[in-house]
Image 1: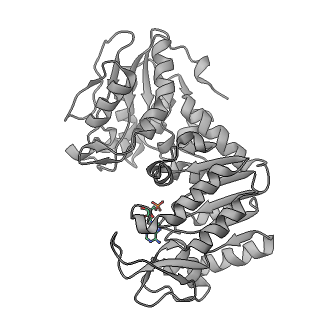
Image 2: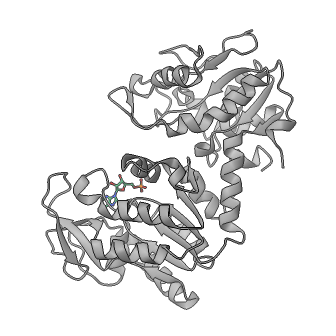
Image 3: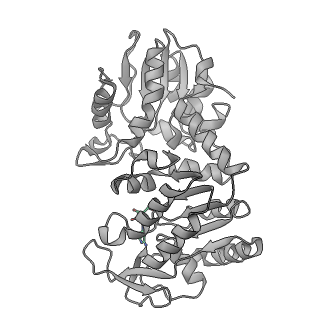
Length: 391
Ligand code: AMP
């Protein structure tokens, strides 16, 4: 397996792909977890005598320059966290400052301001990657949250240069490997969030590996609909009901303990101040929408997690952004904190949820920085950004 220590970096110009895709509201960074997670590799490279050109993306600008998706606030936060100057050319498309010396740090503007970064046409991506490759000596891939994308800076560029994974990517892969190969049992997977379509493949791939599968969030209503329950105005992906029915019967055949909520917190509207009521899963009114798992379900999920030696959690149990619908997510987070085995929190939303509740990163075994990437890894897919790094 390739490693950062085996790459020659002293006095070299290193292109470092990071995942700095942090939530920003009104110009302020809401959660800088991904920036902090990038620091060990950045510091190591600087201490090893490299100069750095850091490339990253923010949101989905689709090839257009957008001031809201500028990495300028990230450059500012990096300056503070590194306590050193970081060059950033605001407002422009990414371009590498030529001929800078040892210890110099440059953060390029949002790589996705160039349509070529995400182009489906290989030659367009390659010529964009070539421009960067010509002004650096080697490549370090540490943007775990983007490794499932075959984008120019993730896939094409490392193929053109001596390369190695950064510490974050190596750590993420090590954890995900543990989850897929021989996890310590009992092994529970808890899934939530808004869409079943995002998680069908991972459920399908993990079903014969897990002991407990607990489902909450907006996605659970497609499961409840598949069981013939009235779900009112709750989120649902009707076209997936047949697939979900198949998954439910496969889980039963495999002896997997499939946990669905028995009570739901409902409200007449999707809003922070909508009146919240707890109802049985059989009592969701036609005019109501389910916005959280109920307290009995949360307790039940927590009890199922307690004896587990490995737990992977992706996706909030409810609309945790609204305090009235945050209880289920908080209880699951607390249960994860208390297990004696390995707990892995996967994905931006789940990580933001646990931090917003005041949990520390150290309360969990591992907080993955990449929701989509970790799910695709667990689906058993080959991820382009890892393949390009020989992982
Ligand atoms: P995802 O991006 O698929 O991980 O979904 C995360 C989002 O799902 C969060 O912003 C939650 O507010 C939302 N969510 C969780 N539960 C529900 C629900 N019952 N109804 C609507 N949205 C939900």
